[in-house]
Image (cartoon, rainbow, N blue to C red):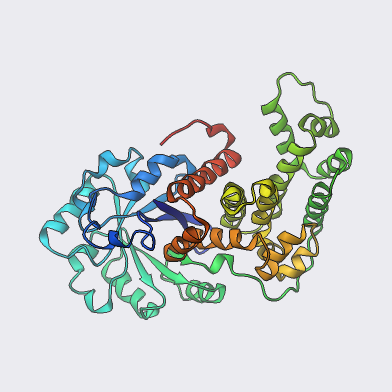
Length: 414
């Protein structure tokens, strides 16, 4: 199976929920699965399996998760496929679920069990016929590229005032801002939050300059622990984070200074901690999904290192993932942003020109996180990658992120 979590935002660019996009088979490698075998296990819902595997705590702050159900799996024993709280699961249907009595009754049953409901991919010509279904929906997704979205919001707001409207397929910040100004939508979905910066006009704030200085120090060969510790001491948030990190690793250590704490970690562990903790602080004034994206890319790229014959350079791949949204963070073109940090030529080539030996890893990670399964399938064939291993590497990245950002939750399951 392949799976990816896609964020859904509100008007403040805060993540309110995630959609799980999945694919059970590699259709390029196993084209026969598109035929007679397509409905094998059709009652099984991959999205629920993913939640059960990764643990509902992987998605923090009680955010909802949208899970696609088909016209067959909607009649499955959904409750016993995943033991996550029902109120956090939104069952997402599309036009393949017809607006007829047995389906409408089933949707009512699921609502009575505490699940929320959402629908997407309706054509304008189907709006009237789907009234019995739409009345039950908690969320309605409208495709920005296929529907006159300004007119559609008036129609749905008037007829279905209890449903939240989600504007989907938004590619740019400009479209997002225009839709916000016009009002009527509660949620937004698309690639707009991670678009590359093409113009750099802003100076880097002093605090960010400190973080960049620290990143440059620790990514230099044989950096000095004391020099890094002195810069950490300038920032309260980093100091607290460092002390918490050391306290989790040691007992009765009697740490009295920041330099002592840095020495307790050692050069390699301090470098790794700084590359994650500093990035988290550096991105603090951006949507939290950008931080999450950066860290997940870092860990996923590191996990994929062996598949691309780069096992000995997994630390560099981790750093490449961390800095892959540096243009968004510093609000400068990537080439300008990378002039401010010290990275290897391989990382620079991949991030600026999409060339070099790291570029295929970056391409795979980006295609995967967009759930572009056709392209992911093609790349897996080229690299002779096993689908199960890729899935496990992605889930491991999600769990790592949960433990990094919520260290008190290690060991929890769904």
